[in-house]
Length: 190
Image (cartoon, rainbow, N blue to C red; front, side):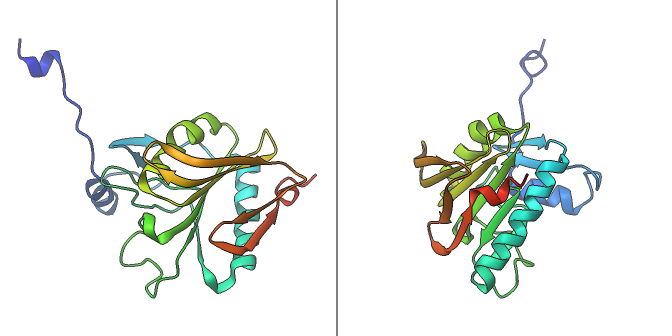
């Protein structure tokens, strides 16, 4: 038997290939996919608490940051040659074309936010290390079950060097834009 048949080889998809496949209509429009380290991954369905929290964060961040940033909701970031994640939210440096000519890259990103309900282990174990390796300067994980915001800063190839959790009595601020400060309790109404 051929070695290829006995030991099939995986083909790691590049970011460019993944984006071209999307533009060519290879994926169904309703599919929620992202590219993580060369593998096309189906994203988890969005529950109402997660969706509502994303809406709330979008409103708060747009109001607090104003024209200083662009708030991107569940849109791609080219985070390296083999990764195109879609964080729940990202704060991007303003750009004249509003990213219509190309997707943002790590240098464009001031903050990524993942809102986690059933996806906490995946967000912490897979997406956060990916963001750190890409050099994204700050990431927040809103842990809906734990009712806290986990903040990660100072990226390195091995992960974020600084992290802390902020509960409902705390306030979190964006490291690169101090005007963006959110009382954690605002994210957990009721």
